[in-house]
Length: 202
Ligand code: TMP
Image 1 (cartoon, rainbow, N blue to C red):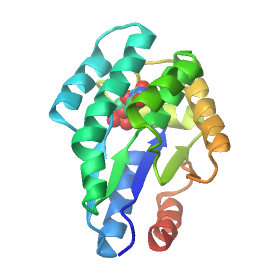
Image 2 (image 1 turned 90 degrees about the vertical axis):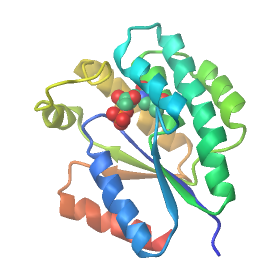
Image 3 (image 1 turned 90 degrees about the horizontal axis):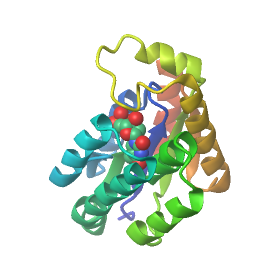
Image 4 (image 1 turned 45 degrees about the vertical axis):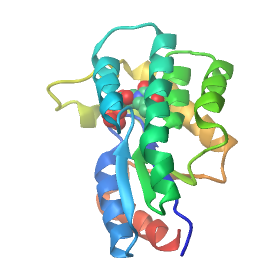
Protein backbone atom coordinates (compact mmCIF):
# COMPACT_ATOMS: atom_id res chain seq x y z
CA UNK A 1 0.00 0.00 0.00
CA UNK A 2 1.36 3.45 -0.88
CA UNK A 3 1.70 5.88 2.02
CA UNK A 4 -1.23 8.27 2.48
CA UNK A 5 -0.51 11.62 0.88
CA UNK A 6 -1.37 15.14 1.98
CA UNK A 7 -2.25 17.32 -1.02
CA UNK A 8 -3.20 21.00 -0.91
CA UNK A 9 -4.83 23.33 -3.43
CA UNK A 10 -3.81 26.98 -3.45
CA UNK A 11 -4.28 30.14 -5.47
CA UNK A 12 -5.78 33.61 -5.37
CA UNK A 13 -9.57 33.97 -5.09
CA UNK A 14 -11.07 33.49 -8.54
CA UNK A 15 -8.40 31.06 -9.80
CA UNK A 16 -11.01 28.28 -10.03
CA UNK A 17 -9.26 25.94 -7.61
CA UNK A 18 -12.44 24.60 -5.94
CA UNK A 19 -13.90 23.41 -9.27
CA UNK A 20 -10.60 21.76 -10.16
CA UNK A 21 -10.32 20.21 -6.72
CA UNK A 22 -13.68 18.45 -7.14
CA UNK A 23 -12.54 17.08 -10.48
CA UNK A 24 -9.13 15.99 -9.17
CA UNK A 25 -10.57 14.14 -6.17
CA UNK A 26 -12.96 12.33 -8.55
CA UNK A 27 -9.95 11.17 -10.57
CA UNK A 28 -8.18 9.92 -7.42
CA UNK A 29 -11.33 8.09 -6.24
CA UNK A 30 -11.48 6.34 -9.61
CA UNK A 31 -8.04 4.95 -8.78
CA UNK A 32 -9.61 3.49 -5.62
CA UNK A 33 -7.88 5.93 -3.27
CA UNK A 34 -9.59 6.46 0.08
CA UNK A 35 -9.51 10.17 0.70
CA UNK A 36 -10.78 12.96 2.87
CA UNK A 37 -11.72 16.33 1.47
CA UNK A 38 -11.34 19.32 3.75
CA UNK A 39 -10.68 23.07 3.75
CA UNK A 40 -9.03 25.97 5.54
CA UNK A 41 -9.85 28.03 7.38
CA UNK A 42 -12.28 25.41 8.66
CA UNK A 43 -12.39 21.64 8.53
CA UNK A 44 -13.51 21.19 12.17
CA UNK A 45 -16.52 22.61 14.08
CA UNK A 46 -14.28 25.13 15.86
CA UNK A 47 -12.39 25.88 12.66
CA UNK A 48 -15.63 26.65 10.83
CA UNK A 49 -16.60 29.12 13.59
CA UNK A 50 -13.19 30.76 13.24
CA UNK A 51 -13.71 30.86 9.47
CA UNK A 52 -16.89 32.89 9.91
CA UNK A 53 -15.03 35.38 12.09
CA UNK A 54 -12.00 35.52 9.79
CA UNK A 55 -14.06 36.09 6.65
CA UNK A 56 -16.35 38.75 8.11
CA UNK A 57 -14.89 40.58 11.16
CA UNK A 58 -12.36 43.39 10.96
CA UNK A 59 -9.16 42.63 12.89
CA UNK A 60 -5.44 43.39 13.07
CA UNK A 61 -3.32 41.56 10.47
CA UNK A 62 -1.38 39.67 13.17
CA UNK A 63 -4.60 38.62 14.92
CA UNK A 64 -5.73 37.30 11.55
CA UNK A 65 -2.49 35.34 11.12
CA UNK A 66 -2.74 33.82 14.60
CA UNK A 67 -6.39 32.85 14.15
CA UNK A 68 -5.56 31.18 10.82
CA UNK A 69 -2.91 29.10 12.60
CA UNK A 70 -5.20 28.42 15.58
CA UNK A 71 -7.82 26.98 13.21
CA UNK A 72 -5.02 25.03 11.51
CA UNK A 73 -3.83 23.60 14.84
CA UNK A 74 -7.30 22.20 15.51
CA UNK A 75 -7.57 20.93 11.93
CA UNK A 76 -4.22 19.14 12.14
CA UNK A 77 -4.88 17.55 15.51
CA UNK A 78 -8.53 16.57 14.96
CA UNK A 79 -8.59 15.75 11.26
CA UNK A 80 -5.41 15.80 9.18
CA UNK A 81 -2.94 13.83 11.29
CA UNK A 82 -5.49 11.13 12.34
CA UNK A 83 -6.62 10.66 8.72
CA UNK A 84 -3.06 10.31 7.39
CA UNK A 85 -2.21 7.91 10.20
CA UNK A 86 -5.20 5.73 9.31
CA UNK A 87 -4.08 5.55 5.67
CA UNK A 88 -6.51 8.10 4.21
CA UNK A 89 -5.21 10.67 1.76
CA UNK A 90 -6.07 14.24 2.74
CA UNK A 91 -6.94 16.85 0.11
CA UNK A 92 -7.23 20.33 1.58
CA UNK A 93 -8.60 23.44 -0.09
CA UNK A 94 -5.80 25.71 1.22
CA UNK A 95 -3.26 25.25 4.03
CA UNK A 96 -0.36 27.28 5.43
CA UNK A 97 0.93 28.51 2.04
CA UNK A 98 -2.25 30.64 2.06
CA UNK A 99 -1.07 32.29 5.31
CA UNK A 100 2.29 33.12 3.73
CA UNK A 101 0.51 34.48 0.64
CA UNK A 102 -2.42 36.39 2.22
CA UNK A 103 -1.18 37.41 5.67
CA UNK A 104 2.49 37.59 4.57
CA UNK A 105 2.26 38.96 1.02
CA UNK A 106 -1.18 40.57 1.17
CA UNK A 107 -1.17 42.09 4.67
CA UNK A 108 2.56 42.45 5.21
CA UNK A 109 2.94 40.24 8.33
CA UNK A 110 6.66 39.40 8.61
CA UNK A 111 7.70 36.03 7.22
CA UNK A 112 9.80 35.16 10.35
CA UNK A 113 6.65 35.54 12.49
CA UNK A 114 4.69 33.26 10.18
CA UNK A 115 7.56 30.75 10.19
CA UNK A 116 7.44 30.68 13.99
CA UNK A 117 3.71 29.92 13.93
CA UNK A 118 4.25 27.32 11.22
CA UNK A 119 6.94 25.59 13.26
CA UNK A 120 4.80 25.70 16.41
CA UNK A 121 1.64 24.37 14.77
CA UNK A 122 2.99 22.02 12.13
CA UNK A 123 6.37 20.92 13.44
CA UNK A 124 7.95 19.52 10.29
CA UNK A 125 4.69 18.63 8.58
CA UNK A 126 4.26 20.01 5.06
CA UNK A 127 2.01 18.86 2.22
CA UNK A 128 3.48 16.14 -0.02
CA UNK A 129 2.13 18.03 -3.01
CA UNK A 130 0.72 21.54 -3.49
CA UNK A 131 -1.11 22.47 -6.67
CA UNK A 132 -0.84 26.23 -7.10
CA UNK A 133 -3.42 27.65 -9.50
CA UNK A 134 -1.69 30.72 -10.84
CA UNK A 135 -3.62 33.27 -12.85
CA UNK A 136 -3.24 36.93 -13.90
CA UNK A 137 -5.09 39.00 -11.31
CA UNK A 138 -7.25 40.83 -13.88
CA UNK A 139 -8.72 37.48 -15.01
CA UNK A 140 -9.28 36.29 -11.42
CA UNK A 141 -11.06 39.58 -10.63
CA UNK A 142 -13.32 39.23 -13.68
CA UNK A 143 -14.30 35.74 -12.52
CA UNK A 144 -15.28 37.08 -9.08
CA UNK A 145 -17.18 40.04 -10.53
CA UNK A 146 -20.53 38.21 -10.76
CA UNK A 147 -20.54 37.18 -7.07
CA UNK A 148 -23.11 39.13 -5.05
CA UNK A 149 -21.69 38.66 -1.55
CA UNK A 150 -17.92 38.97 -1.39
CA UNK A 151 -16.10 38.17 1.87
CA UNK A 152 -13.48 40.38 3.55
CA UNK A 153 -10.65 38.95 1.42
CA UNK A 154 -12.52 38.95 -1.88
CA UNK A 155 -13.35 42.64 -1.34
CA UNK A 156 -9.63 43.58 -1.38
CA UNK A 157 -8.19 45.61 -4.26
CA UNK A 158 -6.11 44.35 -7.19
CA UNK A 159 -2.81 45.44 -5.59
CA UNK A 160 -3.51 43.19 -2.58
CA UNK A 161 -4.01 40.20 -4.90
CA UNK A 162 -0.89 41.04 -6.91
CA UNK A 163 1.08 40.76 -3.64
CA UNK A 164 -0.72 37.53 -2.72
CA UNK A 165 0.04 36.05 -6.15
CA UNK A 166 3.71 37.03 -5.94
CA UNK A 167 4.04 35.59 -2.41
CA UNK A 168 2.61 32.28 -3.64
CA UNK A 169 5.12 32.23 -6.52
CA UNK A 170 7.98 33.06 -4.12
CA UNK A 171 6.93 30.23 -1.83
CA UNK A 172 6.75 27.82 -4.79
CA UNK A 173 10.24 28.89 -5.88
CA UNK A 174 11.52 28.23 -2.34
CA UNK A 175 10.02 24.71 -2.17
CA UNK A 176 9.96 23.47 -5.78
CA UNK A 177 9.98 19.79 -4.69
CA UNK A 178 6.36 19.95 -3.49
CA UNK A 179 4.78 22.62 -5.73
CA UNK A 180 3.25 22.20 -9.17
CA UNK A 181 2.15 25.46 -10.77
CA UNK A 182 -0.95 25.16 -12.92
CA UNK A 183 -1.70 27.99 -15.35
CA UNK A 184 -5.33 28.49 -14.39
CA UNK A 185 -6.23 30.87 -17.22
CA UNK A 186 -6.12 27.88 -19.58
CA UNK A 187 -9.36 26.22 -20.67
CA UNK A 188 -11.12 23.78 -18.35
CA UNK A 189 -10.22 20.91 -20.69
CA UNK A 190 -6.52 21.81 -20.71
CA UNK A 191 -6.37 22.09 -16.91
CA UNK A 192 -8.25 18.81 -16.48
CA UNK A 193 -5.81 17.09 -18.82
CA UNK A 194 -2.93 18.28 -16.66
CA UNK A 195 -4.72 17.23 -13.46
CA UNK A 196 -5.54 13.85 -14.93
CA UNK A 197 -1.83 13.28 -15.59
CA UNK A 198 -0.93 14.33 -12.03
CA UNK A 199 -3.69 12.14 -10.49
CA UNK A 200 -2.48 9.09 -12.37
CA UNK A 201 1.20 9.52 -11.52
CA UNK A 202 1.30 10.51 -7.84
P1 TMP B 1 -11.66 30.15 0.23
O1 TMP B 1 -12.49 31.25 -0.34
O2 TMP B 1 -10.67 29.60 -0.75
O3 TMP B 1 -12.44 29.11 0.96
O4 TMP B 1 -10.71 30.83 1.35
C1 TMP B 1 -11.20 31.74 2.24
C2 TMP B 1 -10.30 32.96 2.31
O5 TMP B 1 -9.39 32.82 3.38
C3 TMP B 1 -9.49 33.23 1.05
O6 TMP B 1 -9.76 34.54 0.63
C4 TMP B 1 -8.06 33.14 1.51
C5 TMP B 1 -8.13 33.33 3.00
N1 TMP B 1 -7.08 32.64 3.76
C6 TMP B 1 -6.07 33.39 4.34
O7 TMP B 1 -6.06 34.61 4.21
N2 TMP B 1 -5.10 32.74 5.06
C7 TMP B 1 -5.09 31.40 5.25
O8 TMP B 1 -4.20 30.86 5.92
C8 TMP B 1 -6.16 30.63 4.64
C9 TMP B 1 -6.18 29.16 4.84
C10 TMP B 1 -7.12 31.30 3.91
